[in-house]
Length: 77
Image (cartoon, rainbow, N blue to C red; front, top):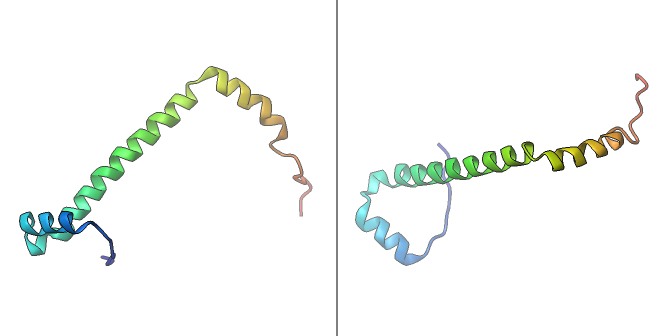
């Protein structure tokens, strides 16, 4: 485990202290962060999937493939 210092509004901290017992707060915060991370990862995956399925965008990116190795020397060292 690693300790982390976070800042939050006093009113939020007061509510958490009132509702979450002392020895359960780290687990509580960890679960909230994990849930938010999973949500954001799913959104990012969906965005990547949409880009991958965009035929017009993929065609445009293929046009740029010719510059992928510009300035790269292919001679073995």
